[in-house]
Image (cartoon, rainbow, N blue to C red):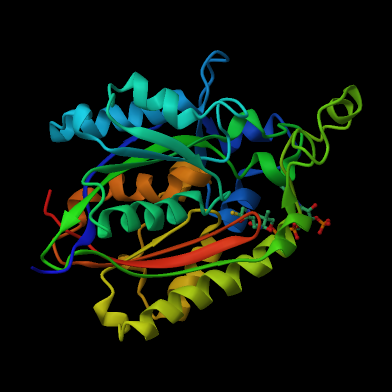
Length: 331
Ligand SMILES: CC(C)(COP(=O)(O)OP(=O)(O)OC[C@H]1O[C@@H](n2cnc3c(N)ncnc32)[C@H](O)[C@@H]1OP(=O)(O)O)[C@@H](O)C(=O)NCCC(=O)NCCS
């Protein structure tokens, strides 16, 4: 019997309706469309305005989109991994709630948090469950309501992030398609440069932490940029080298959408031309755990069976890595 590999067999996505444009941000903070566009590539992002809805809402919509589009019976799903940096609540698993809401009554479910690399790491985790033969249908959801942790008076962060969700289904494949290799890294130095200081066990919430705006994302953009550029390019080049992939062997670069300049630098290092780089940062900004599945969903009809995809991500922690995957279907 052929070796079992873990293939993506379906994708889905959801973004909320409300659009926050660069022009709207000009009225909120001291910034301008030209600065944001040239420094980041972002033109607009989506925001979940309903104060009674959390990240689970985004994830549930993305999962339902996948289920309905592909006629999947949710009762057959074995496991749901919910990749997010903005769970609905601490302690109570957002994944468990999501599983119940979509009718995945036979699944177990948990959250996986690795900042902007949450989805990439979750792909690796999901694939491992499939490769062992233990489970047959693993749903990976990447969703973040970044607007819940962004300070809309801080121009260094509020221009970057947006809300959204995507979902992919992993299933066993015996044709050699699916996940081929991964190279995942982390470095704790990152918590000096990108963090929410309060609300965790190190600095529990207090009147003082709220007054000091310590429940919002703070980042030293310049340093994060420096680490992101070199590390994301390094791992992508490494995965190509390890798998004897030349630039012409790579069909698509699927990179975390944090900053267009970081993605361009990664593509350049790999020798991959612009037309092979999936890009939607201009429409959504950085949706953290949702960027990779949103790319797959937006560009699903371009992906062909057998195509070589190189995924790359970089995020808080720091966490980063690259995955080489062979696409398994024509849509
Ligand atoms: C945030 C980021 C876009 C800023 O771009 P940058 O080129 O590094 O800009 P700097 O922070 O050096 O700021 C340059 C100038 O623009 C100003 N500036 C910062 N934000 C601004 C904004 N929104 N509008 C206008 N000016 C702004 C700064 O105050 C600074 O002014 P000064 O030179 O007078 O001090 C960039 O650093 C970045 O993308 N970093 C990585 C972020 C990231 O990927 N985070 C998520 C990781 S997953």
